[in-house]
Figure (cartoon, rainbow, N blue to C red):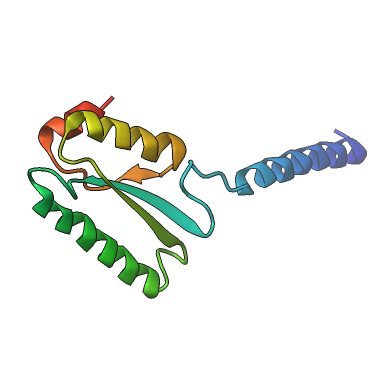
Length: 122
């Protein structure tokens, strides 16, 4: 290979690496996550036969407020959305759908109840 051919090959390879690097450097997040926040959803019975479990959702909210007050997670604030499912599996499905499809949370955190978790598994 001549010197000019070698330089051309090197330049083409370098251009390819630079193009690949810019693609890899682009940040891509799932719905509910950004450079500044993370949206977390929660389903718990604030009403209904086991409304005492509502303290679980309130406690989680207090903890996330503490995390935010201390700077968040790697500088990202937690947006905690907690909805009442009245400890009814059909209501759990409805509220989970709202959190995922409308509120676009990144994850569901601490949903309470076996039947309720089975109902939203799909």
